[in-house]
Image 1 (cartoon, rainbow, N blue to C red):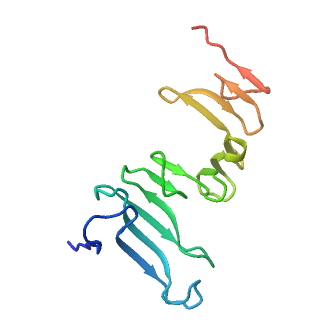
Image 2 (tube, rainbow, N blue to C red):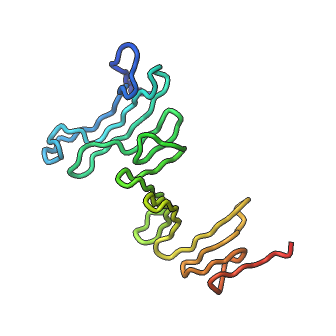
Image 3 (tube, one colour):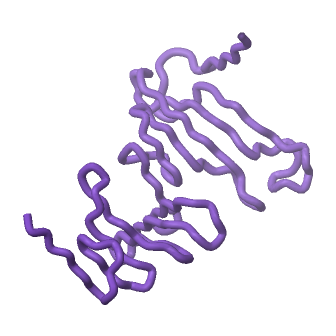
Length: 171
């Protein structure tokens, strides 16, 4: 089985941010920002602690007409950050230009779901785009509530016929 091994060229103790190894993709296309030979993507392993016992992996890409930038990180605890080099939880998504974050589920051009943090409004938005309802389930995936695409809300009932409809259990 082939093995690729990368070793650090840093001798002695390591500093936070020291690059321990990289896989780099370069372009031979002279029209790329920076010209032929420019780095267009890379994966880098970096020291996260001066004792040299914690490392992170950073993924970099280059947008059209821009400079290579870090896009995703897996930190020393296994937390994944998209748009941030310092993920605060298992998955942290940040729009670096606005401190917002969006998780889009589905890849269809007009029908998908989104969970969006709006930093300027301090609000969490849950939405569907196109036709779609939002269901809330609890416990063992037991139905609790629905917001229909037409705006009707059903609590305990998944087909409300008025603005808000509730089904009360006799329990």
